[in-house]
Image (cartoon, rainbow, N blue to C red; front, side, top):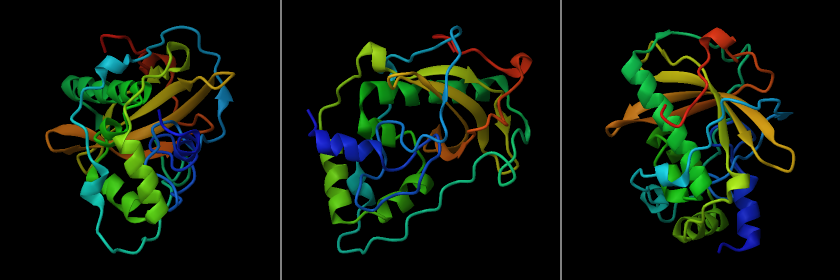
Amino acid sequence: MLPLALLVAAIVVLAPVFGGPGLRSDRVALSPDVTGIPSPKSSDTDSGLDTPDPSLCTITPREPLAFRTPGALPAVAPAEAPAVGSGFSWPRGATATSEETALIHAAIREFHACKNAGDYPRLLALYTTRYLAPRFAALDASGWQATLELAQSTPTPLPSVERETVVLLGEVRRLSDGRLGAFVAAVVPAGQPLEIDAVLIFAFEDGRWRIDESHADPTGLARPAPARAVAPTAGT
């Protein structure tokens, strides 16, 4: 098991998907848990839920050392992506194909499956190099130590009552630069369940779609109308 202090450090750093504060160089580069939760609200959703099983986390793991440059000084942490609103509008672009939609939905489910599996190296593999590289570059020595310890620890699946659940998947859309995006709502058990909304942007890298940007949607501006939303299922 990972020491409690390291687990706490992992939880409060950087929001890999649902927005939050920028990277702190003395912490791990990517938390295995939701971090920097943006203005969470109590979930009132009680149907159409999908809690991806840890067994669905099958992507080839990615090692943090691939991003390390010995002797390099920590770079400036990357800026937080703008939240949905005046700095980032959604929806945009054309509707994706059915095949693209299925692949993005599968990628979102695997992301939550890897978080439910507590599998940090596989969680890293779900992001693009463009997303990860500047975050690793901002780590100092203690941040690297924490990151490597986390990557080398044995994955421990979360108890079923603590696993993240996908509540809603919006229509997948193709952007002008070829990337794909979708609105996602997920529930994170934390005493009282919290629903977190975001728009995820995916880029095609090394044969699959990976998370390239995350835009928090704390006020629900991008939340689709029921007719355009997809209630996730285990088969989606």
